[in-house]
Amino acid sequence: MENKVSVLMERYELGRLLGQGTFAKVFYARSISTGQSVAIKMIDKEKILRVGLIDQIKREISVMRLVKHPHIVRLYEVMATKTKIYFVMEYAKGGELFYKVAKGKLKEDVARRYFQQLINAVDFCHSRGVYHRDLKPENLLLDENENLKISDFGLSALAESKHQDGLLHTTCGTPAYVAPEVINRKGYDGAKADIWSCGVVLFVLLAGYLPFHDSNLMEMYRKIGKAEFRCPNSFPPEVRRLLFRILDPNPNTRISIAKIKDHPWFKRGLNARSIKPELENNDVASSSTNAGTSSFESTSTATGDTQDLVALSNLNAFDIISFSAGFDLSRLFEETSRKKEARFTSWQPAAVIISKLEEVAKRLKLKTTKRDRGLYKFEGTREGRKGILSIDAEIFEVTPEFHLVEMKKSSGDTLEYQKVLDEGLRPGLQDIVWVWQGEREPLESEEQEQENQHQQLENQVSEDQQQLMQPLTLQDKLA
Image (cartoon, rainbow, N blue to C red; front, side, top):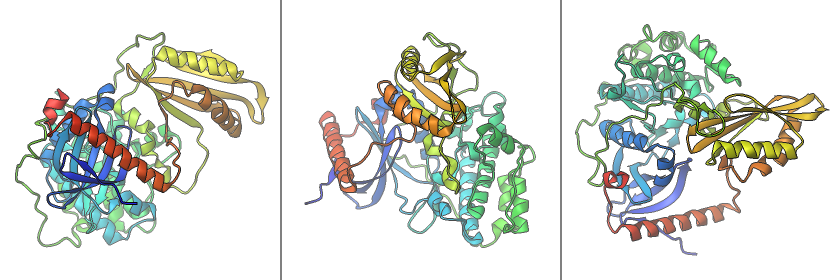
């Protein structure tokens, strides 16, 4: 059967799916006019509007226009229609650096080379007043020549995002890579927080595992706060000394990028000719936006009670990310265990979610105890193998229209909990669930998956082209 080719706006031939998240999909594509390979990030506009992420998208565009550097993924063009936003970006053929590390630790000279490229790129970002705030191997891509490229500036901040105290106050990042001062939520220097994350990345590259890890999130925060980690015996003494200076829990005494670049271990193997970033200030493309620099700031202060029947806990950006399946740290560790918690998101009001939880609990003969701020406890009526099964359910407000529900076993037998979850709670709650964490619809076959992707692309492209015969500016479409 002849392969079907989907064409976007008569400019790009769309190919295979490279990856996807809650709000976007990334496809491989090829420019029809030049034949150049690119990656196209296709963002669902309706979804980001519903959860209030439009300013974050604008900021990401602004940031990527500022940081043109050999070791940062390049944004070529931004296009938009009534339903979709398209980022046309540099294609990194080598994929995520994470997948290299997942196979085992890297050789010292290879790890050093990636670290040198990372530090040079981060230094350039800081010189432009840009702080990435989510540096980790999953956001570091490799091109066909094994050169590192920083990607995903969705959580980045600009210098003007600082408060009057000169510090940033948005708590965000991926828990295992985030600096102690970010967790403390008292304001932090974006540059120093990025340096800490670079240190965690260096440790992971050389060790093959994280310096700070614990199945209990609060215990992991404690370890991070005290910089409680141990270097493997295989680490050279000079690497140990450098890491202890980077992973200094006191940001005031933490080593600077300038001193990292002057460190003997870092300078080893560097070419005499230093890497010069692209300093030309060309605009991305005529179809891109002159997006404002308003930031997606989320303070640690709760906004008060909801209009529903119960007061809920509010989630800030850091909480949302730490809950996300995309940031599951378990892949870096060999040991596996059945998870004792499950999470789902819902577009239903809090009152509807609560009513459904109580209805399902009654059907399963679980006793319900109501507590404050959206916390419920469900208990079995009969003693199991390890006592009475007890399940905590907590409802978090992400936005007034969007909620996250976390359910975890607080006591009892894990297998019994898993059975209640799989055979009772999941089926019973399906009417209100948007998606369970980590869940993906079953695919009939690999060929069927590809066929479905091509069909979806064709339908979307056809719809977009009917709505819009030529690309509109993103500024028009976001208005």
